[in-house]
Amino acid sequence: MQSFETLFDQYSWDEIKKDIYGKTSKDVERALGKSQRDLEDFKALISPAADPYLERMAQESHELTVKRFGKTMQMYAPMYLSNVCENICTYCGFSMNNRIKRKILKDHEIIEEAKHLRSLGYQHILLVTGEANKKVGVSYLKHAIELVKPYFANISIEVQPLEQAEYEELLEIGLHAVLVYQETYRKEDYTKHHTRGNKSNFSHRLDTPDRLGKAGIHKIGLGALFGLEDWRIDSFFTALHLRYLQKKYWQSIYSISFPRLRPHEGNLEPKVEMTDKHLAQLIFAYRLLDQEIELSLSTRESEDFRNNIFKLGITSISAGSKTNPGGYVVDEDSLEQFEISDERSPAEMEALFKSHGYDTVWKNWDLSLQ
Image (cartoon, rainbow, N blue to C red; front, side, top):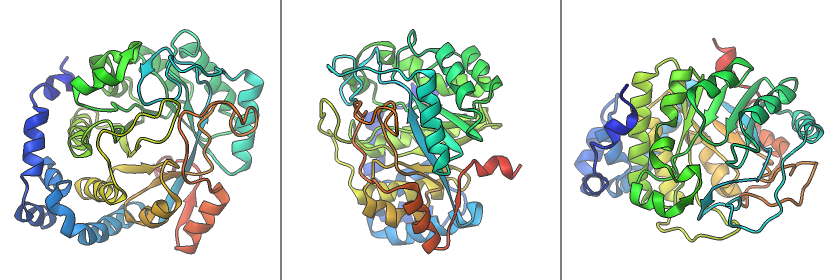
């Protein structure tokens, strides 16, 4: 059966780059004049030519988001189960070549972390591990999901790519969503950044959302790690991937995340800088492309940026996050995957939203609307 890679191979990175940077103000105005946009319009909206139109894009992004989602903000928290990893990646603190103390949470530690997060109000949890299939594989994940189910209404994971049958196993016991980022869609650079381990297999990772769709996962999260390559080109390929999945696996819903390189053990310098203005432009462009897509922002971003952007297209946000296993109560000093920027508590974020007339949604509102 055809997978996304078949479509992906029909595109040239350099040609897409040339096309995006060749867009003009007329192309942007044409895109803004439409109610239904396609990928050509998306190219224009993420191009340098769109810079003078950001205020207009921001206003429409806000209006479309409120029309579809109302004045609500879904809150979630990542819960890191392990920093053990079998990959060598240039940008990650968990990379196998980093000499750090490794930790895998035990049952009682998982429960302690879960109880703490639930006491803060969270009902939506994202379970995260390093990629170590033998030590934190499917059996460990199944057990972890069973342990946290009594505390949360919605369980997502961000772990190593699995096979379709393994996703189906996790779906049966309560898994709701899976986040899997390609990191970069530029194959040559992907190889440079992933030199050892299963993650070095570009094609296997690229086909993971296909396996998720076939397994019937309710929500699939996509994204690229901005800083590895030109954000505009990676974002086009992410949008191409999104459109392919939406057409083929229409029963699932989709989310986009916007991670930028943050300080970590190893400290890879970004190849291409993505400014706050660029990130805002991209958020607006995704909302103008797709009124239904969920757009998620993490604590990687600064307090000031998050204060201003949340009303302009974002539907899901984390707060008080810890990116180390046991970081909330069990082992606060274990190594982080990356440094967070916005350290405000969930209660502080809820107060911010309330001051702007937004309701905080602690569990997955899309289930409650069905």
